[in-house]
Length: 279
Image 1 (spheres, rainbow, N blue to C red):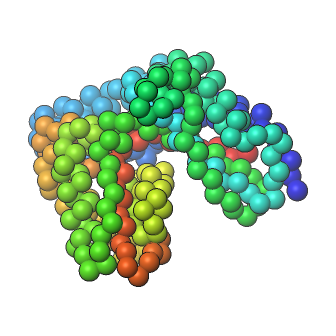
Image 2 (tube, rainbow, N blue to C red):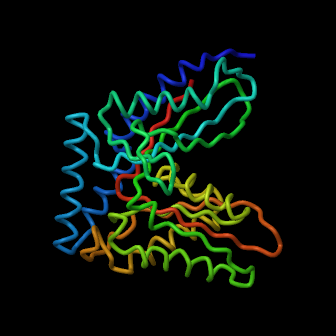
């Protein structure tokens, strides 16, 4: 059994919070640049150019790509052959606390959804655990801004709604969102499981590279088809029209009950940030 000090988790989460907020992943940059090369609408091209300029400045100056540095979503894959010495929840939250303070990142978390008092350090983090084989701990920090989070939706479809019902719900969610989530967006879709599982799958889908399709051909084709149909809506970058409404559609699926067809759509803006490290 491998021993891992919880302090290492704190140190790692701290740095991941800073890096994820300042450096857009390479796959996102490449997709934005490819869309810019193919975009014909002048206003859309100008906005995509500004987006590229923005993330290049963030790279050069090590400053946040967006003023909304989000709630810290922390995904942990914990090997079954590793023992963590210390309180893992506190270790993660202390890493977020240090990262958002030392990195001068905006602190957006309130202690209660109704009294709205800011916690002052962006904790608590939203922590997701997964047990996996091995003796490693994989940590992914994904800051989630709420301009896009607020545009997400879930629906308990009937099995009879079928594939077309799923497609219609995903497209309608994007259309209802319009310019609010700062398009071009990445669309995470969770299909199956239960009410809460579908939402988790949709958020997890946003962690996958936009260059990596679903491993199942059926869902890979569905991702491609939905991306084409969403871009045909003509919302465009920041809602000013054009063919680049979405950069990618990522789908995660899971078995479900015979009586249900849960579908969740988690939208992320063009600043789809996440950074991973393995300990």
